[in-house]
Length: 252
Length: 314
Image (cartoon, rainbow over all chains, first blue to last red; front, top):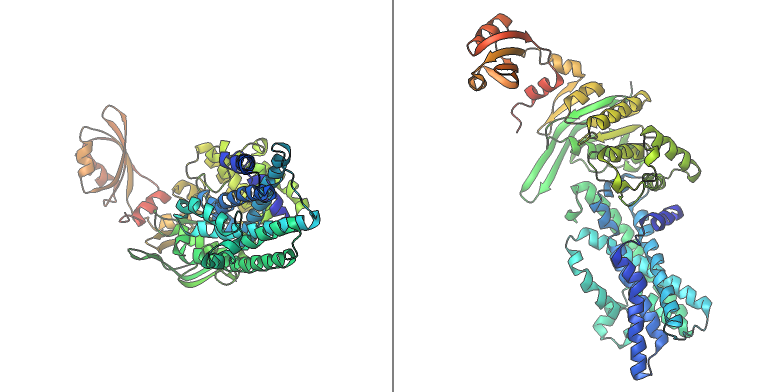
């Protein structure tokens, strides 16, 4: 599994893709520029939160586009049947793709902090690095799980790419990247708390402040991620059966 | 010899929007260890469906299918470790990877021990003559190179059975010959090969036994020589004649499957089938269209047998 993950990063991370280059390296710069001017105009902007927010947006964008196309790209290159016929399960292949994409998304978080500190001169206060890194790991796991779900949804529904951009911003809003979920309408809160990323993002914000709720939030995030992982394993197994029964994924 | 594939009453129905399509209709056959077994038939006959079922990628609708003694429905995982497949065309590769990287990735998918991977990949690249191109990106490969890379990939798990679905499609003659030599070599090593192809000469050269499939049914199965013998009643001729009435000859219902090659001026080399079995009578009949310089019966090729057996298939 580790070998597969390493090969995913080594062979399949496409740094030549212009969109990925933008998402990973330039988008944080754009958002931080907005934060910088906001601070210049208003002066009372919580820069810690906005630096993390700009990192989170880019991380989510990268995961949406990269993990989202993980399975569908196997269909396009006609390698899906080769992968399915191999003794390694399709679930392991997808999880390694989604995990490697989430790890690559981490680049944008590091870069956001570097840009914020050295280009824009923001001071970021992280009170406890251990808990902050722990929360980032929790976030990575939640992004990985969401990536797996996206990979499945994009592969099964033919026209979902048309809606890719429509998913991008609502998820940012619903998962509490800018506005805490508690301030959202009750109905939306209900949906938000069902998304693993909401808890991962909450954990990161709480860990920056060393909020005492962070332990609970991290445990909930890991718990929800685990449930989604089980669900994904079930759906992928079902997907393989549908492929074998009907000869195509469209039957799902 | 032991059977490695046992197919009994295999039926496969595809559910389509416009209704059900019967792709395989109660077909039965066995394949023995070390055999090169050909599945031949027109497009849509059911060859690829059969291969997909045997490689556990598709479930049968009815029937019993055993590969290496395991059931394709309930024991697919046990089969997958011991088989591999190649299908024709340039797809099924990751263009951004090099040939070597592609093989490393599949070594991991096939759970080959890390220590063993470099030696295995070197050996396979050597076998398919891609050693010099090992660090070249796959998107720069020719069709022949991609097919050879697929052959290397399919040998990663030292399979007991190889499924080759139209492996020489679109290859130049040199590439096709290289691939045929490889198949022979693999067969000599005791690997069972299931081959589908549209090239009759290729099937005749490589296959120990052949099954012709049409409309989802096996119309004949046996050694190529037996299949040809089964068509011995056909009167196939070739002749050289000088004629100005070639079109009239072709329109004559006595002649079937006429193939002509204009040699020079009015001289034509023709191959045809007719009901008349005597060479003298055939010559007399042909003389009404021109001067017959030479006429002889010719040996039945696998292609002749195929054309005869598939005659009314669209």
